[in-house]
Length: 187
Length: 187
DNA sequence: TTTGCTTTTTGACATAAATCAAAAAGCAGA
DNA sequence: TCTGCTTTTTGATTTATGTCAAAAAGCAAA
Image (cartoon, rainbow over all chains, first blue to last red; front, side, top):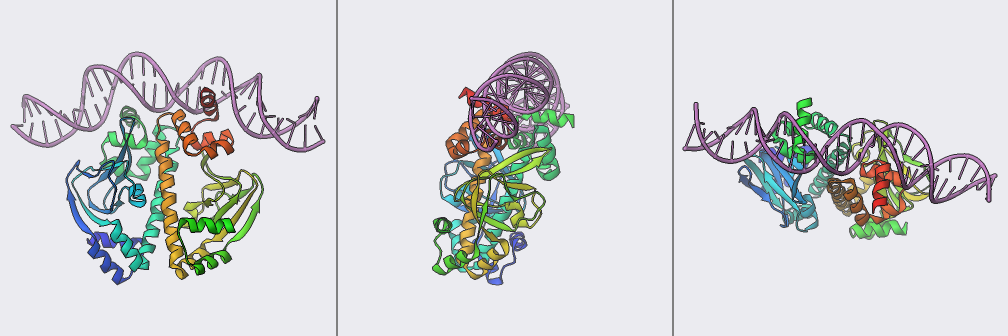
């Protein structure tokens, strides 16, 4: 919980009342390796803060799993699309390691927005940061060869390369596992 | 200006005071075909609303132009990254047709946030929508073949295919112009 | 209609990456 | 240490797409 509050305040300074209100609204969750936080077809009602562990989001396309993001310590994670729109998600969220998370529901968050202007501002700023990360990722995806994309990943997100199995990274980069293995042996 | 206000209210209902405040803060801009709204290296201080015309954002990678978004009537456009972070942009924004735009500066917008809670909420919601669009685009980019990506573009954004020169669409899809031409002749 | 410029198409060839299949390496539990 | 399971690597082949070059088509102004 300390880590959660520290991370929140790093995004945007908030009042003590807002801080106290937030403390009461998060619930602790402990999950084990390979467990699912969310599966395809469900409506995602929660935003999660990942205190410890790692996690991935993936969806199925033509019978193949496409990993499209990873989460690590101090990240806020959710099925953004479903959480925002209230539609059923196409996404699965799976633990890569045993993990500790804190959860808040969308309804609770909406109530907080109404009571605390500074929490709404915090979230607006958090969205900006999320948006920029996704955009950077998108730009990276335009690198011509798979090899360039992988090298870019190593320099920009070494923690992913270090902590995530090769197969998931290949799916994240949009290439086959065999190709990634060959790229790696060449470097 | 009517179109701008109508579009804003379609995102999120705001008070009459907020609406009046907004009216005073936008400046009209008229630009001709192929002109630039923003070039690489500048700091982007404005958010624009596109009343009429079309526009693209692109950056240079290894001496090649990568088009990464298009804007049309009723879109808000800017170099998001630079606008949010205050860093110099890597992006160029170019008019595809003669266009009419409305501009607001970041400083003015920040002042509005402080004076009108509902404008901050409007922007938070606008960010959510932007994020979702970028995410959908990203998911589309993972489609296996260039041909699938193009067909997906036709069904999801037919206006792009109708109004934008082939070369820019190819760059947007991350394929060569020749490949897109061949794909099109096959369909 | 002719001219000149831009955009799109076509052709020949080179190459990156996918696929299918199997071997090797890594690793946890008995 | 051996066993069985998972992950990674290697090999052979096929396919999609890039690149370079040139022709064709489209289009606006004289």
